[in-house]
Image 1 (tube, rainbow, N blue to C red):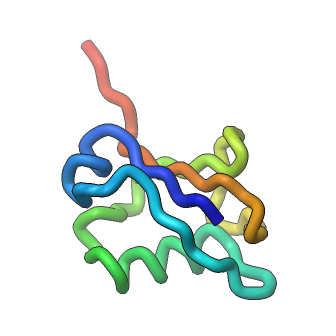
Image 2 (cartoon, rainbow, N blue to C red; image 1 turned 120 degrees about the vertical axis):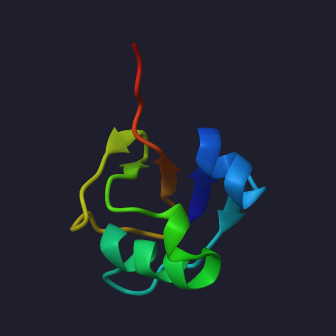
Length: 78
């Protein structure tokens, strides 16, 4: 999978993307746990947004090796 990071998450991790192999039946929550173990929990709070193949995903969304998975902080504005 191609994992993309955006906005302040990209800046905090100091990377814009990385490749990760999906395990059989991997879900977004399992990927999130893997990323927390790799980078730290502070970068993946519960309100971080995830999109799979440019569609907003939830924790139970199934993942495949050919997916593009994007993580980005919630948008705020004023």
